[in-house]
Image 1 (spheres, rainbow, N blue to C red):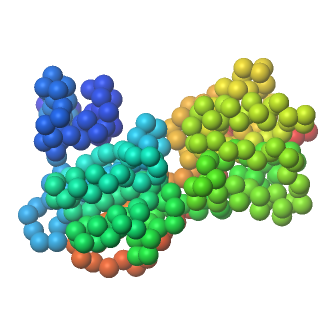
Image 2 (cartoon, rainbow, N blue to C red):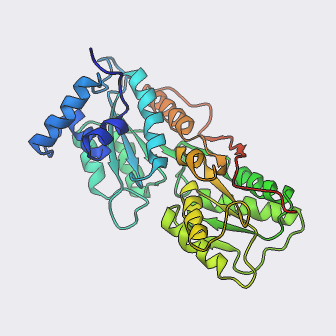
Length: 338
């Protein structure tokens, strides 16, 4: 009897390969070593995983491209699972790839050529954007695009799905203010990325509304990774007057901050309260479990996939810009000041 059907990311983990490698096998790409191909195919067969192909009917998507800025994070895996669930139900194939090129925010020029060769029906871009020329080429090819959490301002007519990042930043800061904290720092992502700017702006708005001055050095910027959270937390601890609370604008950065505090002999939340953003699985299993703002990644991915399939079918969209709510999830990494 076949095992329960796995997700693409679970197949990749079991095979000891990347998600794009599994995607290549699913879609018949030749550039996979024979032994690796056999190992992946065996797992696909045992887990009842078949390539998602739509029925041969006019207006139906047969293959969509899912393009990530970074495939190596738990954040990306939640997006992948959300897309895959909708694609599976719709009988649609998914090709997974990562951004290449100097910018790391948009696909390189060869990507359009590859799309055309494999007759892709639609594209989902994650934390990326398109140059005007790329958008024009896709328009000429008749390939619709939907962006998940745009890295820039989407071009005219390009639909996108995001989260209420500003409101989430407000909620994180207000939670810490309500607990009696005054010295609250923030570790944002890259200041050029809209979702990062919105989270930091929400923090600033909450601090201003509470008439709390933000000390010099309290606004830091990482790159959404644990090492950058570790680095910026150490910088905060080196200040003459360190914060009593920190809002890290990504769970990965919050966990990096945990590590820095542990090495300094500081305790969470006894010495410093920490709030994250995303609500990844790792947030629940952190020690202590991380209070965080939940970004509904799988739901965002599912919504974007539905929008893309509607465009492929020639249907209109009720809205070209959708933002999903970001509730605060209170766990054990924050405490009330005495």
